[in-house]
Amino acid sequence: MSIFRICLIPQSAIRNLKYYVWAMGVTLLVCMPVRADIYRYVDSRGIICFTNVPTMPGYRIYIREGTLLPADDLSGRYDMYISEAARKYGVSFSLIKAVIKVESNFDPYAVSRSGACGLMQIMPETAKALGIIDSFDPRENILGGVRYLKELLARFQGNLSLALAAYNAGPGKVQSLKRMPPIEETRSFVRRVMQYLNLY
Image 1: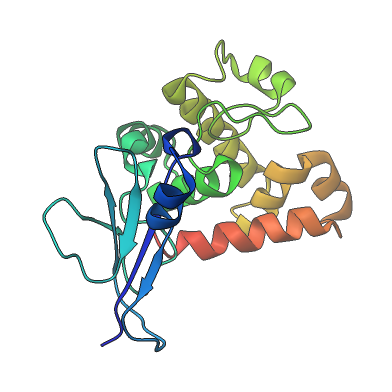
Image 2: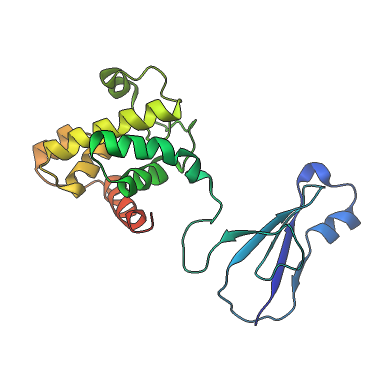
């Protein structure tokens, strides 16, 4: 079996070149391709170590073999709000979570170049129409975003691809074309949501 260990040190912890070289060292005991779970450990000095074979207590699973997502990502902290919204509006839990993953990667303070805010990246005018007061409040953002997504699903007769395209590009564009707009960002958004839909 191939074994690897990689350690990364915060810049603020660097004391001298010798310490830096030691901390940033990459130890490859056997150089062969490997697929396995990846474990993560942060020591008292802030050094982050990744390995596929934990050698002491304190390592936590970071990425499970065969998945695209870190095993200890922060997405779980919003599951209670996602479940609430799923029940309230009759939208799939997996779909909501996939949209949030693609829109903001679970960052409640995310702001896009176009001004979309929060976990579900809601535009200010849409937030106002939905009665959202604070787009950076996770619960409020998720409930408002899912309500909007439900409206789009109804508007496009349950066609998930069109509803997602409308979520990204705006319902007017999709409605006028009666198909997915030829916008690569929108097509990529729909593809990625569909991919993550199968993971949650």
